[in-house]
Image (cartoon, helix red, strand yellow):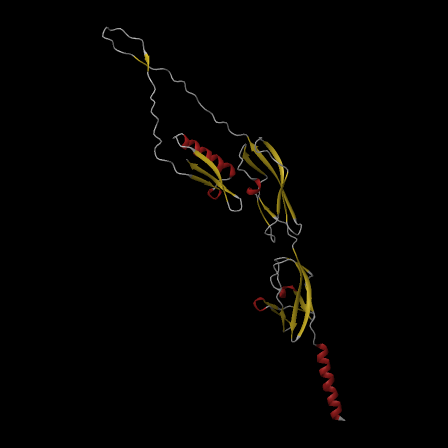
Length: 277
């Protein structure tokens, strides 16, 4: 009789242990912002009702109430629905969550206005305004409104940006198209200079005008090309003006000069280049 009771006690004990052994994992939430969490262990708030004590990101494990739980690896760099498996002592459970992007693109331009000289056809407003997004590499950037680079005036426009998750950003901006400074040409009238001859009779012959020299001044050595880059502190306006000023200086020495835009592989303006011809 004692043997039967002892066997039943052991069986009841084992049965109780088996019933108590479980793996219940609760996530802190069902939706997470992309790039805010790097490891699926970070998503867990409790295991079997006990808080997470520590996380070993390198081993994809966490410790809760002295138990080691293994967290499966999923792609945490792409938005969408994800399923992660948690394992402990031969037990496992699955949890589903969403990675979403709710962050709007960033428009990196602190000023409320920008100025450009009338007729500057190298000016591209969307090249001056830098826009980035936390998730998308390619996203929409556009202009609401327009301005006429050939007509001086004050133009009100908006920079618009929208990513693949329909997060939007906008910035109001005033484009001041400044009148182009007219080149002032000063004409100096030259008086005709007469050279008086010396006749033997002591009379003064009619004065004859001095003839102008027909020799062409020497150009001298050819000046070098010159770049006016944004990385050196120039912007679109000052780079263009500096290039024109250098061109006039070199042209006065008899050399032809052309000012052209320097663009990156992606079409962004890097500055202006004066090419001596």
